[in-house]
Image 1 (cartoon, helix red, strand yellow):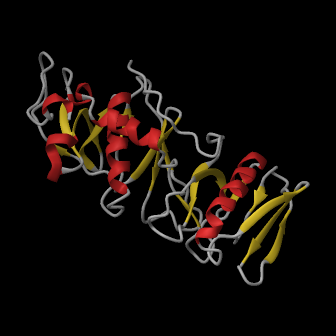
Image 2 (image 1 turned 180 degrees about the vertical axis):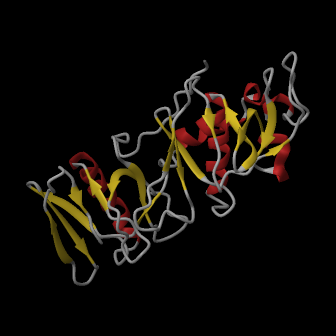
Length: 271
C-alpha cells in the first residue's frame, strides 16, 4: 500500500487534536495576505445562523492572540484585539470603544469564543509550503496511471487533461457506481478540489486530510446548526470511497484489465 505523502498541515504551530476542525476568520479584505486557519472544537449552535462558535485550547488561543496583533491594523473596526491576563483570555472589540470581553477557561479545558468574531469552517492555512506541495502532487504523472481493474475518472469534465484520476468503480445502491481511490490518488483528488475550491467554492468541495482521514467540508451545510464536516476513513485496504452529493465523477477511459498504461488524458511530462 502506498502511503500519503508528508503534506504540511500544521497551522498556528499545532495540528488538529481529536474532535477539532480548521476554522478561519472572515477577512476584512479579500487580498489580505495574513489569513490563518486554527484548530478548534465547534459548538453545535451557530452565531447569527452562519458563523461557528469555536472552543480553543490554550496554545491555540495564544496563537490567535499573536495573529490578531498582526492583522488588527488592517481594519481595527473589523478585527478584535486579544491578550492573556493570567488564565483569563481578554478580547477587545471596536476601535473607538474597545469593549472588553473576559473569557474564562471552560470545563472542557478550552476557551469558548462564543459570538466573538466571524469564524467559519475552513481548511488548513494556505501557506507557501503547502502551495508547492499541492503543485508537486498535481504534477506527479504516476498518480494518473491506472492499475489493472481501475478506470480513469474525473470530477472536472471541463479540464480532463489534468483532472483524470484512476479508481476502482464500486457498486452503490443510490448510484450506478462509486469511485474507490488508492491513498495517493485520493490525496491528488483532494488537492485538485481544494485548490479549485478557493476560486469556485460552489463548484468544488473543500477537502483536506487529518492524518489518514479525509475531511469533507460541505459548502452549503457548514453554516447549519449541528453540522460537522464528514470524515472519510480508509477501508481495510487503505483506499477511499468518495460518494455524496458534492462528489460527481465521470468516466474518462475504459477499464484497464491488463498491463498498466498511461491514458491520453494525462498531461505530457506530468505538467
